[in-house]
Amino acid sequence: MIQLFRKQRRTVKVPAEVADRFGEAFGQIAAGDIAELLTCGELNALADVMRSLGYPGRAEMWTEAHAQGDAEGDSH
Ligand SMILES: [Zn+2]
Image (cartoon, rainbow, N blue to C red; front, side, top):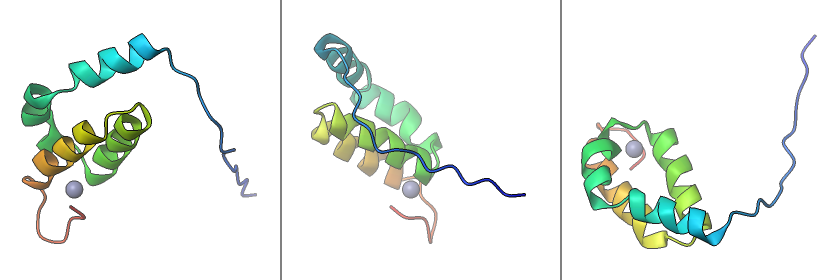
């Protein structure tokens, strides 16, 4: 028997100081060290969180850093 679970779309509140600490912690140095090690799916999930927390520039920077490690046919 196959059970399908549909995730409900929901909104989660995050304290502003938590969002800011996240945005500041995952800056350029971290992107240079880590972004290429992430899978495309992991990068997309991280970038979505960054955009949701108000850091679209960080999301773009991480995507660009990650893309440098993508192989032919990868999504970035
Ligand atoms: Zn990728």
